[in-house]
Length: 82
Image (cartoon, rainbow, N blue to C red; front, side):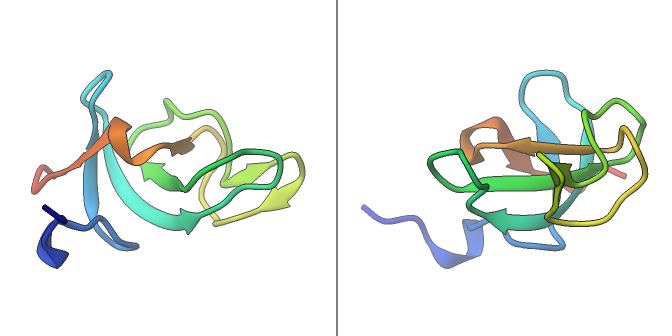
């Protein structure tokens, strides 16, 4: 059975990382050069990320340094956490 549209994660959604419960906002959804699959660019609330929304000098979204992170859909869950 296909997922209902209401459960799809899109740009602007608040999400929680499944591996460590960090929260942030989805800023990008799509492919990244050199990687296979769809990735979610997340602007984390805290400076515990890996980048500023860039990968290999390509800017996918804008955020502060160390607040950006790219993850597969399986690594995030929608949340209402602030």
